[in-house]
Length: 321
Image 1 (tube, rainbow, N blue to C red):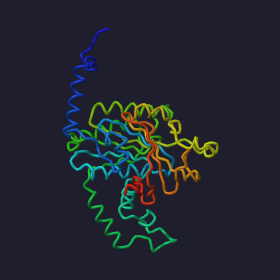
Image 2: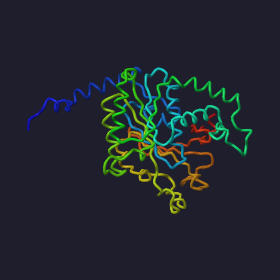
Image 3: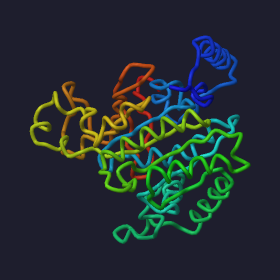
């Protein structure tokens, strides 16, 4: 079989690989190469001190477990914590209108519920937003409107997502930037031709793995749990409380491509009074189960449920304060 010049580009010697790795190690030592530090200390500890460039993070969870809140906080929180890094966010949000995502940011900033900032809390009208609080919302929006965050909220196929990522990278002001791509959520990606949802997820994971080798990019994907975790047998058996990889719809399709595979879980949504074999507390609590950490050990992190205000916080024991 004849070898084409294009085929030769696919080969990389161990010498070249070693040279590239040493350059990266030295760059990390000197601070030239840095991960994107997230708002959560426990995430940074479990990962490579944040979201490392060229990686894929998958976040699974039941509806109402905080998946979208995590993405929403990352969109703007990353800029606050990484002022020296030049990057942009491209958000594929197939579940919610872009303006509603901004509304969640306002909710988090003002410490008011979405219902309150929409003046829709009929039961407690005194909690609805005031003129002074609206001015606070206005001032906050002035601080974020120039951030390089772009939304696409029309569902599309895997191939179209790939096309728009590469097109976004070619916009002149983005060509020298890193790009954080977020997707909420995976099962809303449009199927192409006769492919089913599972085939589409495999195609999605493979596409992300391909694109991350072409441009400076990282991916954060949100996906859904299946219904197995809601079975009464699991609720009644403390040893079966914790979510597993198999609880994520089409888990294998995304798991193999992911560097971080995280399940965010609210046991109180299942009516549990205590969680797992150690009877962990459930009230006002979310648990982040790091099912896979490519360069670390799986852990379970206790978090504080502030989803009422569209945020999740690190849990800090009183003895640590």
